[in-house]
Image (cartoon, rainbow, N blue to C red; front, top):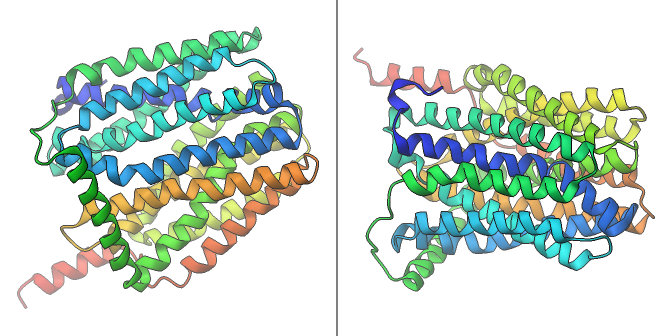
Length: 422
């Protein structure tokens, strides 16, 4: 399963953690729990979408606000692995407690959703930071890709494990099973990842420096036009992508009458098409440039959202889901590559930290707007879907004004020509 260079316990533990949290991501927010909470806990219609939107937005607000502080604490106070374990266990506990949420327990269900979501999203900050410690720069891309692939395997494990329980209507047991699998596959990371470094600063001093660094980076970004425009664009279209992911199961359940089993099958379809899309767009991101790929996939997303508004059959939705999946992995991968072309050399960690902050903050507004429109229109999810178009169109228009993001292959060739003797 693992190449020779990766057969070390810490590398294997790191990859298995991606499998662990993907079990959670596939079953809880992406498919079964989101639809179950909106439909069975809150009640079908606009109110279900409204409360789920609030849960998603609150989760992302908490993660976005605390990430700079806790990221600095992890680095400077030597709490990285400790925080990874704490956040993961919080997510596992929240996931298991979803089994205790009964119909009508709206606030309690929201709180457990937020606990599980904050734990999951927060742990990812510390999990990603281990990558440079595990392998050299020449192998980090391969290890990152390997973790990505193992993560897709985790999605399949979670969906297939939950399938018989969901089919039997035993949802509480499915949530507990996800929590158990999350814990089981996280244990190698807890045991094998490198220990925390010696503390450089106290927790509070480290956190204060983290906030100061974030403010300093934000000011510099505001003085850099292309970087500023790209991040504003990214904020808008990433918000739209997150909103589609957050509400696709609820839409399929309430508008098209999908059974829970169908939701699992749709997500499996999306996972497969995302792998295909990421593979097909990988080379053009270098030869044509990340801006070209992002612009193409954003146009694709605009078409997808427009089609979702008019979809009426199960087959149509599966086709649209597959089309959306091909743009999912591609837009995320190309956006990260685009950001890399805009960062001053030697400051990658600092600027990617702000990029991550934008990504978390971007998941706040769209779900809130979607949920409120659905509630105010008496559960008209088709109309709520159209609100996502404004985020995609706004992001596309702003991105078109960015003058960077050209072919990376050509830029490397030019640098070599400049550096070579005449």
